[in-house]
Image (cartoon, rainbow, N blue to C red; front, side):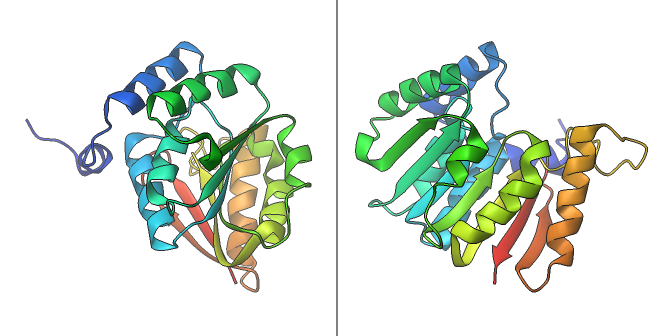
Length: 208
């Protein structure tokens, strides 16, 4: 059986039983989680930048949290924010099943953008955005404020289900993603930007 390169990349690093169980719970609750390939990439990125403090905007079922924690320093702390209590609840199950120490993760269930304004300036190594794209213009500004120099802002699901590359698609969420990409790409005084074709697209912006 011939497997296309994208599928091969997505399944190259396998998920264990804990992540698979978490993903299944997420599907039951209508959660959009990181793809398998995206999770593996984010783990690698967290490892490469020796991430100590990470913010995840959009907890989902906890699959993304598990991947990130595997790549972070063992002493690192992940702050995972979601505005849905149900998402936080099922993510806590995943972290408990993975036997992750409670000191390593801080779950916050509240309006995401309100929480971001309370985070400390230049205190974070990595910010992963997996939330309503219509909040992106604000999130980009806040991410730049809270990231250290050399820290990375990641927009997950940047392709918007394949709509962003299609100029005929003009719904508000697609436009917001498209405009966010243009904004960070054009702001060469603040960011070094690249687009990775894994999962539903990852836009990476490294703070200068």
